[in-house]
Image (tube, rainbow, N blue to C red; front, side):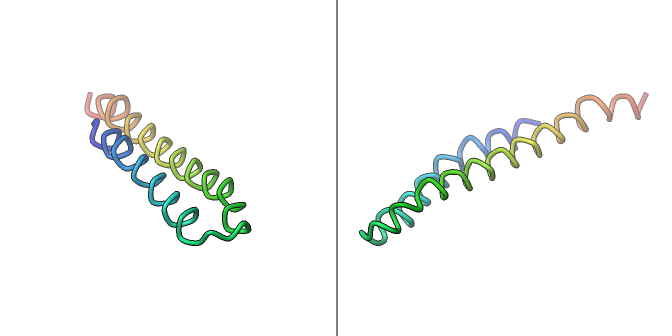
Length: 70
């Protein structure tokens, strides 16, 4: 049940770091640095998507399964 939560908790900092390293440090040009808010917004949307998947998984495993098996 908690495996998706653990996965998200472990991989979100990794995704943020890789986004930082790829988009911020790869090139020193100002236009690439100006894309950083877009990258952060994308990573936050991905994280919210994973959160919704975890909530759906939680709903199915903890609420619907006992109802269907009863």
